[in-house]
Image 1 (spheres, rainbow, N blue to C red):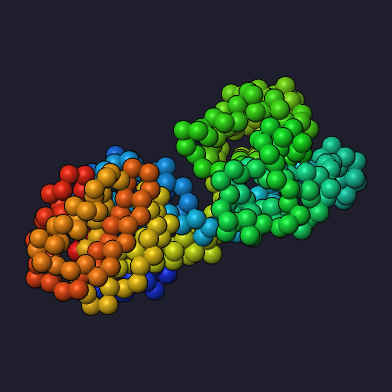
Image 2 (cartoon, rainbow, N blue to C red):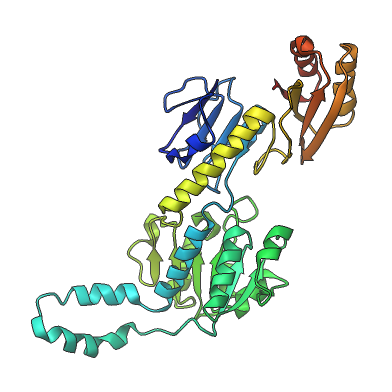
Length: 389
């Protein structure tokens, strides 16, 4: 029986993957795994039993990744599960940021009570809220992951000219990108040539504050910046100064902060990107499936701190998984530990990710000796966690 703790309300679709051998509770004190959405785990104390955390969403800035890695806790996210929901809101943001639809709605709502004069008032005042069409304009997309690719293809369908920048684009996402999208050789090229720039890149030490004075100065004064990734990608002071000086036509963000509220030409959206029932179901479904596979077989898919490893079920044979430092002689030491106990390794899988590695041993027999093998491997310098399945 695996114990799962939920830190937020999670869609019931998780039960399609987490069946009778799972106990799911908000108050589990010693969980084997945690399902989380937005709740902060940065200051949480992790029980020794905790094997995995699955984030039902893409961003993991609410999870202490370094601490999880040093404690041998596998962290998953669900890339692409909310991509369509975010893509649809980006298109809405393009329309709302391009033409002053929000301002126009607010204005005409204020004319309540004017009776039969309302149509005349509309015709007289509507020119103040006019704006250009999207067709034929250039959209620059920074980050061509699951969301960025969907946005690119949708914008092309609207008749926009799309240019993208992502030095680390995956083969999978490249295959999904429309052939009419152009590749920018540099971020500077994209910024200088785009009428709209939309951000779809992760927040890390390299990207934090990336869109500050220098980057914003390279954009057209008539350009609109859209941020559906993370607030911290944009330097707020620099952004507000650019908008105030009309060196940037507007800013649309799904991550509003206090300083962004009530500012002319800034359109704050209350983090609605993934707020659809379909997105919540998709994220929960993917997170639960990944947890099930890891707990029951040791397979890793969409981890953000450990290498991905595709594994079939162990087919009745003993399986031991080892999270360890990626250092020389580790595989030899692990194999030697099995050999000293007279255990034959029928298959060994090893993958690494930076300073950490993951090794899976499938053994021919010797179920009774598994506890001793786990103890022996745990004693090897550089081993972080050992688990028998």
